[in-house]
Image (tube, rainbow, N blue to C red; front, side, top):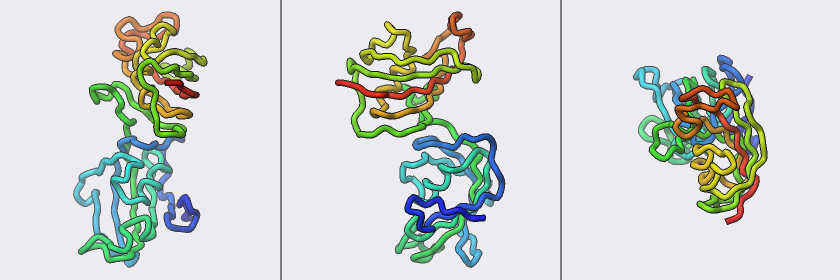
Length: 234
């Protein structure tokens, strides 16, 4: 059964799950999502298919790199899920269409399979060492800069087990004094006030080659922190 997932609840993006995905997690804004898809007109004419090319398609979710219906629909999908998205023209190619294959004002159907996704790579060298998965977007457009007084709530996990949870205030750049790992400091200057994100942090920006005996974290371990930037003062 198709469900209306359009923000306006006007039927402009309808979703029908063909195959359930794994777990409960769905990708968030700026995640790099890899999908297979087949696009057809309402009369069944196929206009594009990554499966036919055997070439999965990867894009940054929620950044306007694809039609609006995809940004809306794929954000609701789990890994391995297959769904049909029925997309009204205003959430697809609109009055212009996409000549020669898609006429003006066309409603489109896409069968989409989510293969996998990775977080928003916010590491300094773009090497995947700090990945962000947004849980709750922040409220405004400003970010804390070095020296700003930040108030955060954080929950640390390793291998699925929680090892710390606390509220802490510190000046950005001086987190080490209150036991804040470098990866959190590097991430916070990309947080907006009120944002909650899950951070996957590799060892070089976490507990390094020594690990952390108090928290039972071995050497060279990747850890996860869910961080909320409650407020900041510049």
